[in-house]
Length: 410
Image (tube, rainbow, N blue to C red; front, top):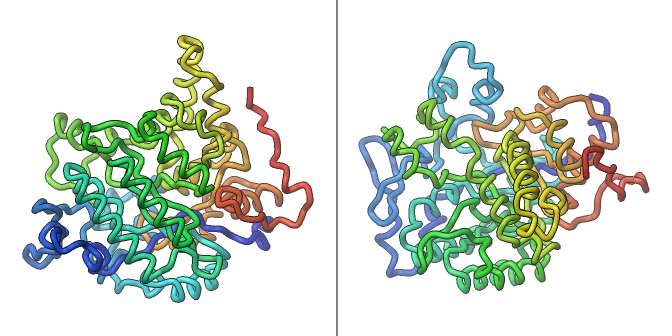
């Protein structure tokens, strides 16, 4: 524990709670009826193109679950067999720190956090719900980004870095949004780890047709976060078990099992197998809040495929992953296992504050973390996120600029 006392924390996984106008304030008039908040009994729901989604139970966020309310569920300590709703108890008023950057700085100072990445919460459902209408999706994403810029800024005092969204349904649209973000000082961007639906149907955003976009990203030096979102596998899973609800808090055991972490594994597998990370080797990609149990099976499969079809891999795919990809494992996972596979310089701390599935306090991570020496503490708790962001590291040790070699690297 002593090793953590003076390590300046960069929390690579935190969130905002958007106001109810975040999606609509800057939405073009022709889409006025496409995004609506509707009242169903006593509850408010978000309807996109006339389809109501309940993935997020209260999209106004006026009342929310307390930070860390689901800790025992994700820690595997649900000995009383409670549902997520039962476990979280009474809702609380939306914390001021989730609504604006100055309030967030106050909370970060209290938490002992120096910098943080702040992800929008509504983005986790918007792209999923509007996927069949690519033009609408691009319009909603841009409206959300404009609202975020106005209310939070993209870089607040070099400490609060929000992650505006880029949707890749249409290549030129993605390039326009990227240019807008860079022009307005974004330091990172968020892309949903999923296939996209454009004019030519569903496909991976890592296919060569998207190269103009990825070339722009590389030239801009903008790091890209692939954050967990509403899973894109509904159609498949519904063939096994039709859902009673899409709410993440009411998913069945089978749905949790089937969804797993398929989307992040496939997204990174596509970026490697379709060659994006080889064509653009300077890209910085981070997996955030997607867990880490998927890494070992992905590495096994990529290694096996390299032996079977080496002609498809101009570079060792595992080394491509280690070069281009950072991982912020969910807090209940094993940091040591991730480090053994991807290296200490590529593993970042994230608390998921203020979501109920996160931790009540970022420093509460130490309850679950393995013992780490001083060097590894500085790297994991902050400097690896600074490496991802392209910022100077904080460790004053001259040796800290050279990450330890990975013992298992080939």
